[in-house]
Image (cartoon, rainbow, N blue to C red):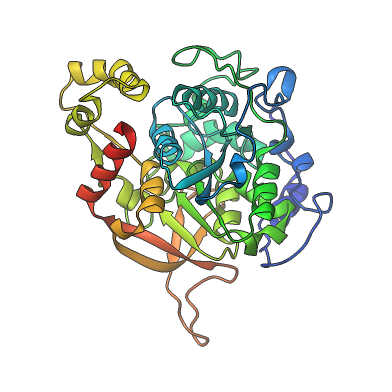
Length: 402
């Protein structure tokens, strides 16, 4: 039998969770209306026996405080998917200090994403980058339970990510081992939200967060420690669909559809700067055999071998095969903001009410005092609608091959 909160309690919890965060506010984790103890983020994480293991591999001491532009990737990691490419691009950039990779359920379960992140960082010799397991479920855990009803009412979603298969018990006990075998390293002990909070406090005003999966970890971080909000330099999201259809429903893009409540909390948080890479631009840029051929040309590297092994058979079978590169665009914009050709400032919100628009991204103009057009509690974000494709592909290929 389905178990959920009674309606009044559920309504109260939702109201607390979606209450606006005031910049510079302070609040203890124990007093937070959405503390890990009351949400899925405090549930089982990716480590053996239900807890993340302490780092079992040597990491370069002091690397996290080294120079360079500081960034954290918060990702629903896969094997050579768009999240992995985004990670490779930043991990291989000399002028960037990748402070860590935090994982969240979305495309994959957090256990799978943690294993993939660890293994792929090992593959490129970046074992010094810590991987921290985060939330294994959306903010409100009944999200998955509602699918059958949503399918009946609004039509079946063409893609449900992690929800289409059972959650593994550990990052070392997946249904199928990662490419190249299980990682030798272990995730860093602790929760992803706490890692984000700690790093932001250590590096005030210096950290960009690339939120390229569901925003659960980020929402938990700002809800449990709202004092970090003015200390974050920028958040770059891959999420939402504003002036174009969604890709899992007519209304919604996958990341924000997977956990709309967290996305709503995140985009309503008054960070210094928020940039959004929505479906509108992400699905204008197709990865084809032309880019694949550029990447695999020349001397062999671990990344090139992975491309050949995982993508080569697909292109051999169908030379016209193509896919989108969603999350990689966030890393590209972080590395080269000048490639953006058109962006708009809008007040952004996410529809978190039950119905066919659940997870829809909403953008509003500024309005005025007599006729406000933006809902109370929303904040401005820069939404990217177009970029220089040639410049993007040159950066993409260069960062994967040099």
